[in-house]
Length: 297
Image (cartoon, rainbow, N blue to C red):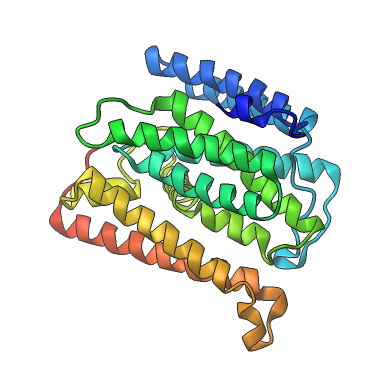
């Protein structure tokens, strides 16, 4: 449907995005049907990301004042972009552990980017976002508990890479036009639940000297299900937090001005959101520990 409606709208990056999607489709499908060793799946993700950033030209060229850093050299731009695309792609795969959750996070992200791109005249990108959002809505209807279909690695990897590309494009647009302040912070908050959860579990696994890509039961959704919440309730809770975080950060872009800290607005807002989600994570972990459930892997 997207290719039908895109028509003559300029979208030079599209061929490279589609190429990367095809690669991730086969990587994910092989893992869903058989099994793919972690490093081979990671290699496929790196190749897909490299195509988008090198030939597609979708890459971060600045830190946009985050921590006082602006333009960055090309080698750092490639490194940060590669890490961003692979990281966000994996984050959606990580949270695809219960019904509805990954799809709902994807719907929130694509809806935000779709409406934003549409509002500021980037119609090609808005069509990409809305096409994906529409397909997610159809998917969620059958992914409700008891689920009739599942996303799997195939869907999660594709969803993750498209969301990562839209986030980077959102940030880069605001480098030139400055439609919003603190664009990197807003983009990160749009994806805060999968990104925070992934960073958290990777740190836990590395601390335990375990494979950072090896599945366990340290995810936020596992904490909630171990406490007796249903899959739908878990997804609703985390989705609501994500929406509230987006509304808070987007509406408080100039937060630092009230305290004479204009240059630190983005960092302060991001700190508040991470502290909030960190507090929720700690509270859920503590409750699960007191109940003595969820220790198995």
